[in-house]
Image 1 (cartoon, rainbow over the protein chains, first blue to last red):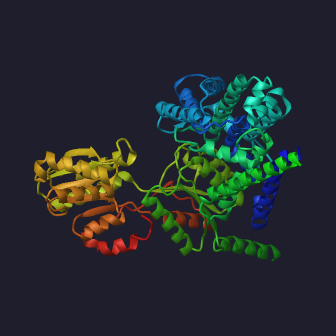
Image 2: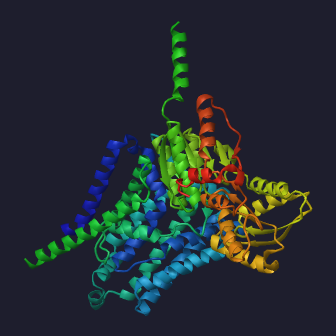
Image 3: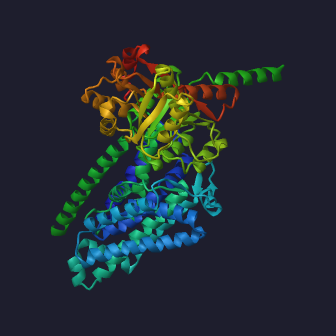
Length: 321
Length: 316
């Protein structure tokens, strides 16, 4: 049991230690402004990463989310420009679309017994292509309701801003945590991720669960797209290229086993915050090449994979002994 | 007396504030082109010259990274922010935040959709003017001789292509001896410039009917020069070559006598930006909302070798 939570503890320790190190160098980094920024700037990534966590926990992967986020932004922008629909109606329509998109991918993965990698890769191209078809240019969103959404925040002491989208992200993390760690559905996801065949033999409805998992990921990607559109007040088909890889990195740094079956949703949030912290540090430093973000994330990923292998060995050894 | 001393202290503190090392954050798009790399190099050099502590953030072509960088600069409490935006949309919120933190923002090279009250000023070149300078040079150079011009346009629909074409036409307006006989896109690339020039040459009697080439950027001109040479003509003499950007390679061509003139799109947007900021820091002078950089004309008479030497290490 403790081995399951070790990666999460390691993630939290790294976050606190990294924050402390950055704080010693730049005292300004420990301000409500930076904390508010970390949550706001990474809100879309956090939401998408929750969906990704659930997919990875089930033993799969979803490469389509970056494209789905970009598609969502363009869809919202174009719908608001060309139709008289209220933004909330557009949001609802979009979430139905992206959830259905996820469900279809899940159904294909299960029914054709195709690797999730291939199916979601196809989904990635499709969603990006659709975004381009809607518009190649960046479409600005100009709607009073939308402006209200993007400028609604709670001013923290110290001029930090706790924005609406940061709040949405934290709610999604909470909902994802409850779903995975407190419901029978979560238990089924973890069981399938651990060993799908055994889970099937034990009576877990594998097919239904897998399809649902990709539906949830599609929903999360759509929601991340809404948040991203609010964040930039625009839809741009070239946006969020490679976000799926950032999300995967956040999930792994957050202590989830890339092969599935073990990990936590709150850990993913900490993983996202670690990645945001690295970027903030590089901006504060101002002389390092921003590509160091990638190098540090790469090193962290590597460290976590090694750590997890090590823990697995220990756990197996413990079981035998 | 005490009050007076306090007032004096306050004024010296305010006046001296500008002399202290200022910190400026520079949110750059990335390094997608040689020109942009040169802009980064020149901005760093300018900052160093003025004793400004420059914090540099490369957005790697992603707006999400750039918004993070600008927010990071605000959180850090920099004295000003230079922003070369990836896209024009989506800057309202973050510009508002900078404004509330009383940090002036100067846009470099590209514009944003937000109202111009949200930033201090924008520094950039006037694309129409660049084309006009090129057109006027050609008009002066050929005098009364009849001259058939072929034009290599930039990427269809892009604003530099539209405006540089319009400017050139304005530059040659009133000179009925100069005619644009063919005009096609070369996509701003060297390879496409060469290919399209080859077709121009074939179509115009092996190039005998062509007196001058106008290319919307130097890269296409360099490709076209290759095509002219392969057709057995002498670029720069048989066919005059005028283009825009002033990248190092075109100066090499000028040294060899194969190109005649180029209009500079200066990578030094930072100097006018820092000048405006200095004035703002010292006595809150609000500059004009658009500061146009000089579109300098270079010809073979301007010692192209020396210009090449000064530009070659900027990262183009």
